[in-house]
Length: 190
Image (cartoon, rainbow, N blue to C red):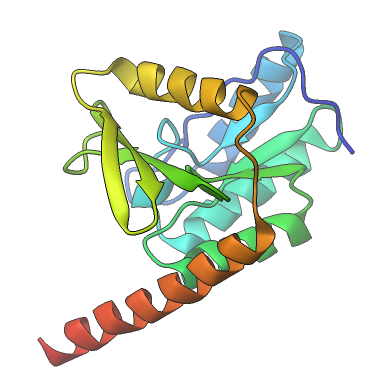
């Protein structure tokens, strides 16, 4: 397993004027960052506009970063998506390409879960929620610069002993598939 330490820049995704991945600009940027002694790279997160890019572009950027890095530092790829199926597909492809880690901002445990996300599509405004059963409690809201309070509160809860429960997580995954199917039917009917 790769060692996760040091500074990990959140990589921007260079695009051409046509909106495609600018592979040579990405390669040059990654090499320049590697030359500074970074500990790893974070690819296709909010800074890299990952959720705004089509899945093929996200995978191209991930493959580009993984290829340029070539094992010199670990690469973490953000796989958060609108649907569970899209996130799972991105995760499988990123792993197949050689990603050292994946990230998404939703967790579930035996006593609840947590979710952090953008408010109204903004990259600057985040809200965080704690889930217990079917209830959701908002624990952070704008103005919260880059979700700082939410991330600290979530880390504190994990440090206090909240743990991951596989059976509950699998049940929530099954539920999310049902909800995704409901939304898909709604889109198809409109």
